[in-house]
Image (cartoon, rainbow, N blue to C red; front, side):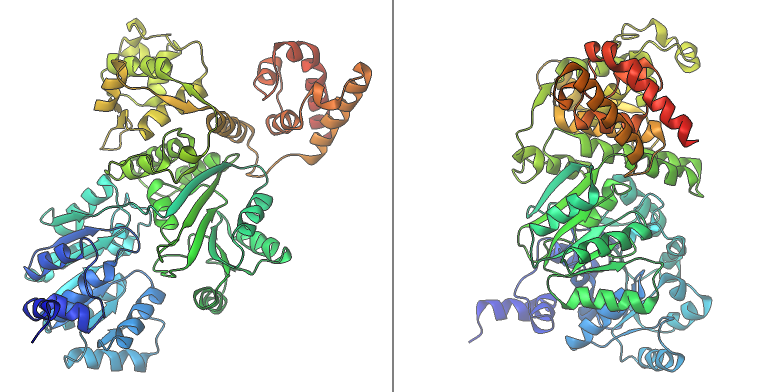
Length: 612
């Protein structure tokens, strides 16, 4: 007599394939819904969290439907890994790509043409040649899967122009269901994929983005090498991924960890393919290896025991951040996502966007997405709430991020928030942060005067604070869901329902003093000084310490009473040139400004003159 489970499998072909071919007793959340839509002949866009089993969503229907399934994948290494895994599961799978010799590619095609192959993996540029399309049109194509589908969207974190041509597929194969899969797509990216690939005739299934086992934390950048080492030493014998912004920093960080007894490897696009492959193989097969990499490493990496992802530099967007941290904790064990944030990060990211060979609209959206990420870094709210809210999910405070766990002091920002909301409302909920701040600060700009906004009640209402303060709070209001950025990406701000409740005094708004102030000090230093991400002039700092010691001896007080080390570091970063700028240095009050300002300004000016 059949067991109930066996009876169900006999009646449900996809469950039979799931058990018999892949060895799983049941589907993960959302998988069955995606498969049922495909098996019914409908196009599907599936947005699923990392580690949710996206590949099975097309592999199982491929075997149920029979015929040939085409899988579009962006990376050769990823294709080869998937083909090898399928073959080990007894599935006839092949790939044709440039890394394989001609004879092997010919043999693979013969298997495809003869009907032996069930899944054929191709890069988009290989698939979309007229020769390949003509040949495939003569075969029994039952399904097309586009993996890492955010690559087709110019708003996604990994846009590839080769993916654009895939929009032709629905016309070339009008009766073939197409599935696009990604773990990384906000509303704008999803809309773009729907329009480009499916002409908006698609069933979009968005499953939960939450990875509750990953602890989220942001730390002000001070000495990134030492901060990284301290973090890694808390995870002895565990595998991790460390992301760096540049190839040079990748190699320096890997060497630094090795010097300090940590097994670390480097990975970036400037290395030879042989070196990259060797390091990736070591990382995938050995335990306790730390991979220090640029974003060239990661897509398709499915190592379940990665204990942490550490960003030494801020990524480009929340989508990229989510995608990268999703490589941790796929085994379900506790994992950590730790980011250093400060100094030159924002300046560098702004520069990357401005230097990009892209349309003005694309750059505008990229800047808005960077603003959203900055808001995430600065927020006093639960980070998981902010992150999931960005992707359209509501969540309760998680208890597993630094803002939930860290009892750093917070300040009530309700009055200031309502000042911002008033300016947004009075100006028509059409303008971006820069214009709103001009209203708050009473700046009679051409744009303000042209629209008569100097006559608004909120004009000049924010003179108690400076521009950076208001910019930070606006970012936090966006991150917290109180303000909504224009979904078309033009930068305008509108008041969300939470914002209206806040405006009526029905909701509180707090900001975390330490995170906000430290982050903003470092952002101002970076954007105002033109220094690099770690740059402090060591000789200038030594000069300031020497002056501090002399002044302390004259007054017969300890040196730290004059200024703390932190103040001198901030001073060396900023290199103020007048008393107003000196007043902005961390730790400089009115009395010290009056007593020490001019003497320290003179020392800084003399040092800079000598350095020229």
